[in-house]
Image 1: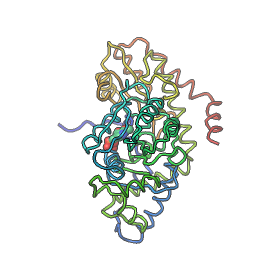
Image 2 (image 1 turned 180 degrees about the vertical axis):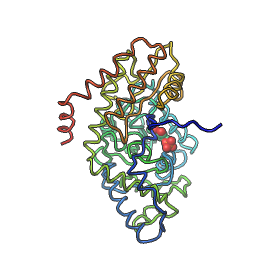
Image 3 (image 1 turned 90 degrees about the horizontal axis):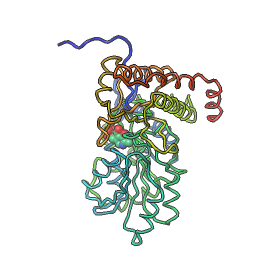
Image 4 (image 1 turned 135 degrees about the vertical axis):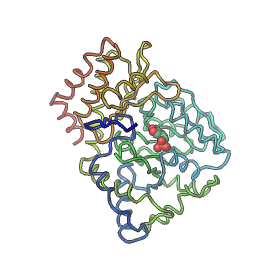
Length: 401
Ligand SMILES: Cc1ncc(COP(=O)(O)O)c(C=O)c1O
């Protein structure tokens, strides 16, 4: 059977991979160059420098030709030794996967259980570290923005909790779905390894993984005894200093990254964050207008890059998503792990504007109406009223200034 042509743009509103803007697509649509030649060295040097402010760091950022999962592994294997204890918090599906990975790698994980509706509780981190008098815990690893739940943990508060105990554990943070969309500061917040990926706020296709690395993490890496080769920071950092990589880099993705960095610089990160905050607020207003429940229970932890929505018992979230895809060519995120069938997730991050959000919310509202959800009428109206208010646009600009 031949695939059916659908006119107009597909709406890719899963919380990553996100829509790749034409400018980035065009930037990648060039012949691959010699990755050991002078042109590449100039490209790499510029990217390695300009990536730092995106992570809020003055230190090095390692770039892997990998998905985010690879960058998770790199963070662990570079800094730790077999049998080391790590403290993690079960905020959702991705925190659970990182925890499982640490176990597979031979680390001993203490996972603080969670209800998948809250972020990391700084007090519980503090209590666990305070109890650890022998300093057996070598790292605290948390997910900043839990993509399965739309909950953003309060990283500065977790840092302060660690500091109150005087515990020397490394602090590692996954920013895969918050990088370049939610305020994040690797240096200021005292993070040792920040784990990122290309396919969300950076507006690129999947395929690049990142580690931003503190001096303390670099020192820990000198004593780390986990087996590693591909992920080893040392050959990377050595080669990067000369504008090359120890193995073949993802050259065309790096062209795209160059364009993404230019676009983020032109818009300014503060404005990028304010835009995400505003779209997230409009989305929450729509959800309340539809009479549906946000999965995230604590307003201090609302995610600005995605919103997870609980559906009533009478609805199956996957059937609703399938009908919206079929009817309106709009992809929404599914419920992951224990949330399967119970939630849908609206991605509002990356290359996104008011009318894209309006279209997304309209598609959901029409899908809810078709599914017989009675209260579906006022969600889009509530969101549009918020987006249309000029004072909010000004407020967004002012907060960005
Ligand atoms: C928060 C978070 N961590 C880790 C991952 C895993 O990244 P990847 O699928 O690129 O390997 C994802 C993927 O969506 C994620 O959202």
